Image (cartoon, rainbow, N blue to C red):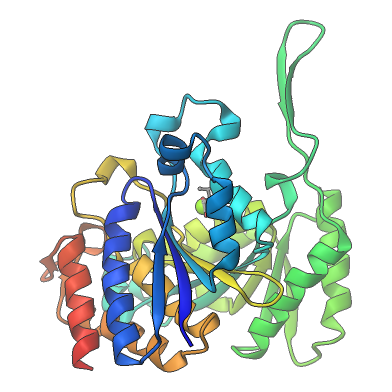
Length: 360
Ligand code: IPM
Ligand code: MG
């Protein structure tokens, strides 16, 4: 049975890293007889330039029909001054929300070969393997009202709203507990319950869900403390579950434990497990077009796609092994470079992983 994958390269370094991920995906498809069928479209600034909107209706329809979606990155200075409602990021938020992709899995795993590339001491990060489960379709990113207005005294004012309903909290908490069950059985729920009403409800509902998971050791942590603990002693964590904005911030922070944000893949899943897969990093306009971006986060996102959407654990393991072999060979893009390694560009890195996968 063929599997339809919608590829959305996006903006900035998106097309460059996606080209490498597609190479690796094609090798995997052949080797493991996955029968993938690729379709391409635009999202973000590229879509704005082509369709006049950051997510066209026809693209959304294609996304709904696809079995999985692979996304590069969106945004860039070229679109910083357009109508805020049409910004590239709006396209990304809309596709997440329209497809109901509430469960965002962001694993931060340190490849032992990269212990030197982390800005933290090797002993603090070696063996690191944590999973951040981020709520992706609610909270302050989508809360209404959000408004900018002029007050009576002539001052400009703007505000956002941070709502969470009990059902939204319950379903993401379940993802957190389910993930903890197949990992180290430890879940840390991150909130700001000492200040925010939404966090107080979050904590209450997480406690309720915990009753169905007696084997999981649950803890709660305020987000400011969690940010500190992540750099102080990150290996204390197994799975962390948190809201949309806290998850956005903490996952960027966790990425540096692994050497570079260029290493972090992600999966965004709906209630039935249908998913969109993307690197956690952005479109890096400062290095776009130079062929130096690290394609590994996108390649590892392909691996997550094969694992979660197509139940091809074997193919996913093989891609991860190929990445590890390439790192063993000492090949590094600039962001993960350390002494004694060979600096390569985006395409060389992609070719090396594709070749290693073929040879496995
Ligand atoms: C991410 C990104 C996005 C987010 C931006 C591009 C809207 O930072 O996926 O983490 O904030 O969710
Ligand atoms: Mg982010």
